[in-house]
Length: 119
Image 1: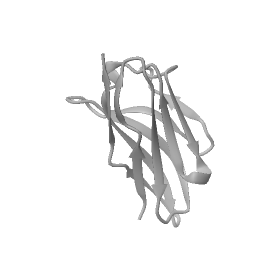
Image 2: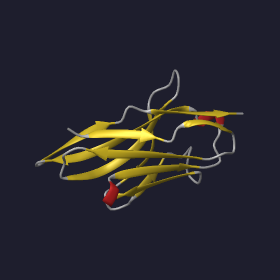
Image 3: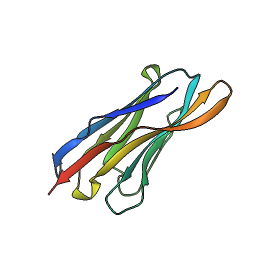
């Protein structure tokens, strides 16, 4: 079974920085694309950023220039460096990974980590 565990969330003042991590564990062949999503109260979950196995990245317009997604394939870990945080970045952040398990690929989700940005 594949497990994704996020860490690094918390409370930060506007303008500050946080770094989220998402570590994958379990038995699998490889990890394809990975991504960070967020859901604010009363809103739908949205894609924040994603990254391919080769390192190609994609960002939501709202975080471009402020957030940086990266991954360490050797550690099966993905990161999200969040700078210049704004109150509207407040949400539960979840990681997603498309994981190849013995010939087939499946999507897995982490449990989520709360990010709260105060003004």
